[in-house]
Amino acid sequence: WHPNIYENGDVCISILHPPVDDPQSGELPSERWNPTQNVRTILLSVISLLNEPNTFSPANVDASVMYRKWRDSKGKDREYVEIIRKQVLATKADAERDGVKVPTTLAEYCVRTRAPPPDEGSDLFYDYYYEDDDVEGGDGDCCYDEDDSGNEES
Image: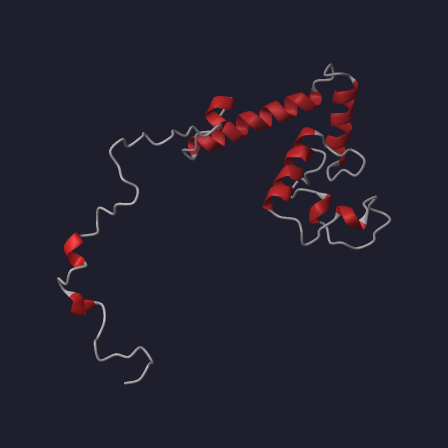
């Protein structure tokens, strides 16, 4: 239930629209799709849209009206919030049923990484898989043929 998401779940976001001049849309051609868009810019646009819905060109007019009432009442009008709360709870139930753990805190959203422990005795220039006797002959025929000039002649 969002002003810029159609009821079928499609997201209405200007950078995904074809770059045509459409005076009815209220969008400039420069705000629409172009080859410089990438996953990062699209995701940033979606995040921005979720944080600050565009109520001037809504995909879901009812959600837009409800959102504006909630925003203008400074949170006193609870209808929009209640619909969102119910959707969040339903989504959590779906995730649990599907075995998906949904992060609920900032710490759960962040991926923790550890620096690799220092290896005090390692020599970065020494290859443990390289045997010294390989250089001195060993099985030298395995790598090249003495009769092969390297000129692709048979």
